[in-house]
Image 1 (cartoon, rainbow over the protein chains, first blue to last red):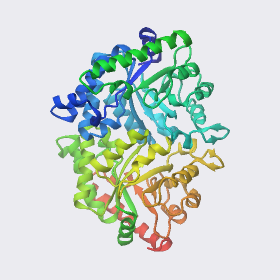
Image 2 (spheres, each protein chain N blue to C red):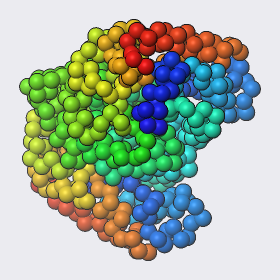
Image 3 (cartoon, rainbow over the protein chains, first blue to last red):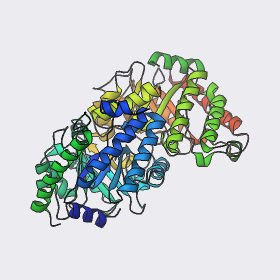
Image 4 (tube, rainbow over the protein chains, first blue to last red):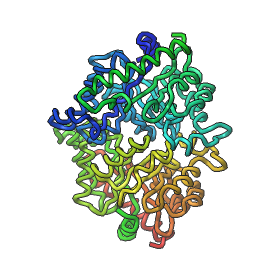
Amino acid sequence: MDRQELIGNIARKRSFLCVGLDSDPLKLPACVRADASSMAEAMLEFNKNIIDAVAPYCVAFKPNTAFYEAMGAEGWQVLAQTVEYIRANYPDQFIIADAKRGDIGNTSALYARAFFEDMNVDALTVAPYMGSDSVKPFLGHDGKWVILLALTSNPGSHDFQFTESVGLPLYARVLRTAQEWAGKDEMMFVVGATQGETFADIRRHAPEHFLLVPGVGAQGGDLSTVCRYGMTEECGLLVNSSRGIIFASKETDYAQAAAQAAKTLSEEMAAMLNQYSKI
Amino acid sequence: MDRQELIGNIARKRSFLCVGLDSDPLKLPACVRADASSMAEAMLEFNKNIIDAVAPYCVAFKPNTAFYEAMGAEGWQVLAQTVEYIRANYPDQFIIADAKRGDIGNTSALYARAFFEDMNVDALTVAPYMGSDSVKPFLGHDGKWVILLALTSNPGSHDFQFTESVGLPLYARVLRTAQEWAGKDEMMFVVGATQGETFADIRRHAPEHFLLVPGVGAQGGDLSTVCRYGMTEECGLLVNSSRGIIFASKETDYAQAAAQAAKTLSEEMAAMLNQYSKI
């Protein structure tokens, strides 16, 4: 999916919500597990019901691969089937594999093949520590995106990402350097919602790139602060919520509860778009 | 496997060789592919033959997960079967899943479960960028190890890892900070063989931790420089070679050629142990 199509979807749906499919098999509603013949079947069924329920309110889905790998080969199959289900039924959704990959060049090239060609997702999260040749193999795939970790949502972000690196915090050094590798049409950056007013500094270093923003909801980030400091005229944000939506209820009404949570968040987003963007 | 057992194996075998099972399905010898009914079967057969051939000359195996993920669910199964095969037949081998993982706390905890419990490897490579809570879930698993990226072997290591971070290069900041999280009994560091004399600086910051050293062979690192600057009295090194061993020949003699390449390298290692270590 290209940048204009993504912006068009956000403008039309009045939402920049990304729903995180962090479908931890150990946390699935009891009713889902009871009806399924295997944990893999339960996971896929859960995902399909969540996707159907929230698709009207979001523009993107982000499965974190860890929750699938935890089930081994079977879980990997569920991930592929989940992506296929979204592709077949909701072709306007942007699909992000949250895998935080990154390795030496020939290995990153293999990851690119696995995620962009075989699994056919639109975007992959990538870790910056290993530098240019670990990131560049993910670039230049038509309509595909690298989403590079810049400033993450977790407490450990303070261990290295804020340390001064040649006159800038390391996260800003990453933003600056990465823009020498790719433009706003194929790269986004991860910036955690918990980082609050630091979004103003992020926008000084990356004024137009889309930001993927996790950490609203369970992790405590505030949507209005993110939008006030981080939104651009073209929106420029994909804000992710995972647990707050997919586990809004653990009872038989889990899909309706997820839809309601996504609807509530998307209504707040519509107001933010009206206030801060021009789309 | 604990530290004393690992050092004991190195002392007994006179080798600190780690063989990288980067068994790219597209690069397997034609004879292996011709005899197999599927790519997955070919990969597993190749791995078993390589393992049998090189086990006398090495103390560790390191499959890079990318080469298995590239095959989807089937590849994941081959990885699990490869680990099982080593466990069953060569219980004195240290098994490293080279996955370069790292995510927010609850997600890293899931990765720890997948790799340490389900797949039962001894160690996992982990990326440091997200900081303490992305690494700590991998600690405290009895006999299991975190191998943290510090200074990698690739050209991109110069983009961020050498930038000054509060008076130290970032790689040294990572070494210093990570030692507040874990001791030499459950943490190692990745340092690329291509980094040459920088090993002297690495040893100033991490005098006793084991280092996992990729980049000898295809990437151009020099074993004697690594040992001169990086070896400790207890060895403190696991030096990895992947392509230089497993693809030493693409013909029907690929297993014998791998054995010969591993034997040659292990003989150089025995000389280094005699010169620089006390084991």
